[in-house]
Image (cartoon, rainbow, N blue to C red):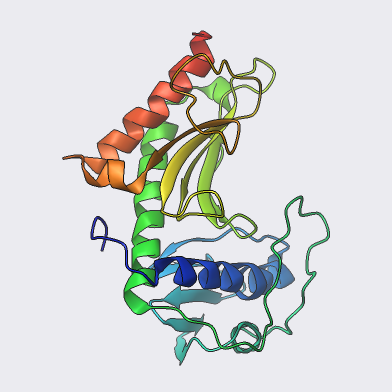
Length: 240
């Protein structure tokens, strides 16, 4: 699915998938485990197993796995998706988000294109594969985190590096946001950065980014993404 030109419907699909992640999938897991992180799943993204269940999006379907039973339903509204996963829709289901997602009308029919949705899933899947390689290169002192798809920002990310030494950063794969129309990868430093270094090229946040198109033009997109992350890691660790 990756590296095909993005469709005109991609941005709307991404925004509506974000609504599903935040108001339907993550709350289903959180209500059982008190945890909210998501991950790539076949054809899209969803929860890990929780209480014998998995809640996920596959293309233009919501999928609920419960024991040996697998139920599917076409995506229609956010409220319907929440109910499909056994929850009542709530605008506020976790009080401590720093950046809660603004809800749309939960009864408004939403538009999720099957191919666009699968591309988002493939983007997250590549991200998790690159994070595994980055984690292998991290040291014990880096305290590298597990990778998650975070519902409030709807991006796949991990953190590594010592915060006390000013080396910690978030390394992520985003399918796009208000400041970036298309998917991009990023390094977001937790501490101060030297903007005179051309590596730190993104004015929207404290860090650097590389676009989907730039990766698509590489012969080895995953290797290019890893090299981008490693350069940020090296700059933060060497203070250059």
